[in-house]
Length: 316
Image: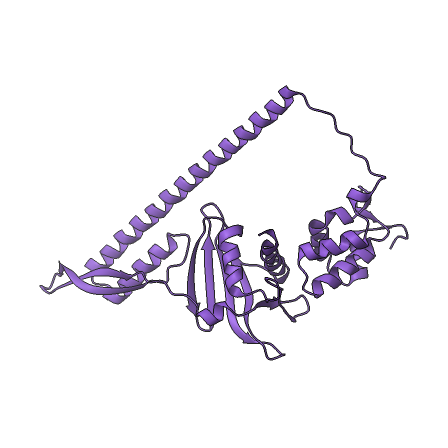
C-alpha cells in the first residue's frame, strides 16, 4: 500500500469490505473521494481510508444515504470545498445553446420511436406465440389425446408466458360449446377466468421490512420519523416513484409472498418476502430474494436496491 495515495484495492483491505463495496461508496458519495491520479489503477489522496471506514460505520448504523452525506460534509473535505481544484467554463453563444437543445430533442424523439418499434415487435411475437399455442391445443383436444383439465392448464400457461407479469387468476371449465367426437359422444367446455387478485394480509404489509447484511445479520432501515421502514412503504415507493406507471401483481407460493411489477419499458422485477422472527424476537417481513427478468441478483445488488428504495422517502 502506498503512503501518499490509495487504490480501490487498498481501501477495500483497510476497510474490510470488497472492492465492489468501495466502488459503491464512491458512486454514492463521489464528492468526498479526492483523486490523486487518473492512471491505472485509479489513485485517491491520503485520507480516503478514513472516509471509507466512516461510511461503513454509518451504514452499519442503518443511516440513509442523505443522513450519511450530511455527516460527511461536516467531517471530511469534499470536491466542492477543495480550493485547489478549478473549473474553467466558457460562456456559450446562442447558436451553440440552440444546437444543443435541438440535438437533445432529436435524441429524445429517436429514443421514443425506438421504444415504440420495440414494443410493437414484442407484441407481435406474443400474439404469434398465442396463436400457435392455441392451434396446437385445439388439435390435441380434437384428437382426444389429453383430458380437459390438462388442456385448460396449458392454455393458462400460454397466456401467462405471453404477458409481462405472472397471472394469479384461477381458471375453471364450464359447459357452453359442444364438440362432436369420432365415436359419437360429445362434450362442451369454455374458459371462465376468476380475475380477482390476491394481496398479503394488512398486518403483514405493516411489518418492518428487513434484509440480510453482508455479514448475514438482519438489517432494517428507519422509515418515517420515529417509525421503522415497512413493507407497505417499500411497495408504495417502488410502484409510484422508482418504476413509474408500473403494473403490480401479488402471488403466494408456500410461505412466501411474491411481488411482481413491471413498467411499460422496464424489466420484470420479482421481490420475495417471508414472515420471519429475528434472533431478538421481532416479527418482520424478510426481503430475501430479488429476480430481474427471471435472473436472481446477488446480495450486494439486493442491498443496494433496498437502500435506494428507502432513500426515496427523503425525496418526498
